Amino acid sequence: MTPLDLVLTPRGVRFAGRVFPCTIGKGGLSTSKKEGDGATPTGVHHIVGMLYRPDRIARPASWALPIGPCDLWSDDGRDSSYNTLVTAPYAFSHEKLRRADPLYDLVLLTDWNWPNAVPGRGSAIFIHQWRRPGYPTEGCIAFRRDHLHWIAEQVVVGTRLIIPEL
Image (cartoon, rainbow, N blue to C red):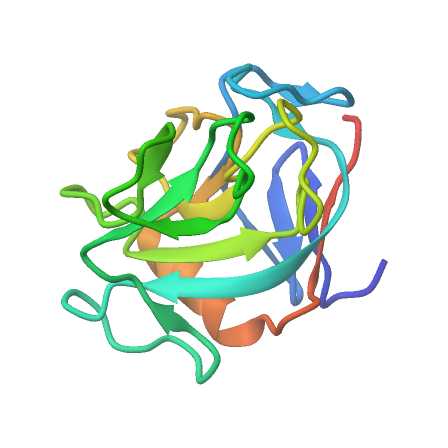
């Protein structure tokens, strides 16, 4: 591990010499992640992209891509585009990326079950803003807004996200 790895610890995520409080999935940590279980998958993952709402925040990094009004994330294991960015209208089950709340104003994409997604193994494992301290996610890791923005300014494509079995 290096100081430039995002490492989940019992106190939060350690990164760049700091520890940031965070929330994880309501299903806890899992070594056998399944779609819909609410668990955060353990292992070594990588940051592979960054999305942001250009109508709400400034571009956080030169490589960040804007979230458009029709952007969705496929979470349907029957879909050949499972666990990827897709566009509305869309017939398969999906998650809207352009939300009314601020949770997805800034999203770091991980390589969990990507690029060759196994149907049912879990999708949309992101790093995003939390609802409030201690409120669990559906499997993602979430941070306080200002902490998320600071982290986003520091990470690069390939930054490791290490989620050990605690």
